[in-house]
Image (cartoon, rainbow, N blue to C red; front, top):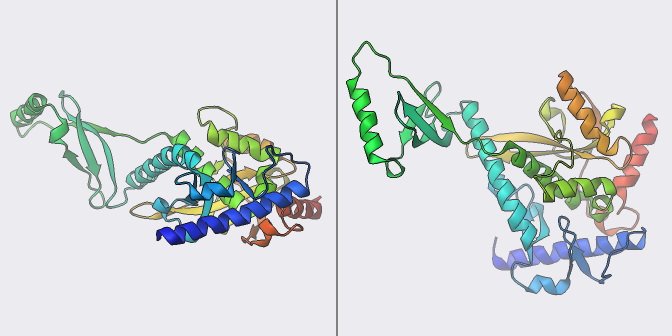
Length: 331
């Protein structure tokens, strides 16, 4: 994407969210200070930026949702302040990348590779890249530059000392990354997708404050760790935002998106709390389903993105009104 194209996209996104912010402030009791006309509020840190910030490098930056490194498209961008984009995005995206690479390796996808260490017999461990060049084969490529030459000599001496009746035994380990931070990264993607679709009318709701706080403070235990679903058939949900209306205990926003590693594309499903009940209690309920090993079946409606959700007064709280309508149908 050229510099001029990026600038035009930044301006378009600023315009959309500035209009949305003005409408939300006008038709709600939300009080934002300082009350700056024609402004943008970063959806993660809630800092306020005037239009002048567009002219200062790295103050308001484009963030692709899902990230470009995982197959996100230019047209699916949002604005974030540069600090939130760099601080949370870079760290969490790296953990997602390790998770995808690890999952490819554990699934024995040909071509998968992980960074790790190996040892043979009683010898020390050595840095290596561990690959699956083809099905049922593991290849370990030691890194001589990061290994102690004397210890490598000991390894070679040990191997050559074995006769034909002795087995060559070894072990390897690899860095699987921080799965909790990877899951926070997936939660971040889902939250930003919801912001792109529904704007401030959704993320200013108290339930979403808790989601945002969890993203901003990954080490804290703000939400029960159950927002990433692994026990359902992912393909029964369309990509994007889905409003789940049945069962009642599973009423939520279900955010579905694909992420691409170097070798394959995988589907991910993240739960965001709804505006009414069960709200944040959805995560406790999901934890219980995981403990009991229950499968989740559900009914819902896919919500296509539409600019009217952001810039028309009778649509800017659609995340509330649509949910209320769906709830009324099943009460």
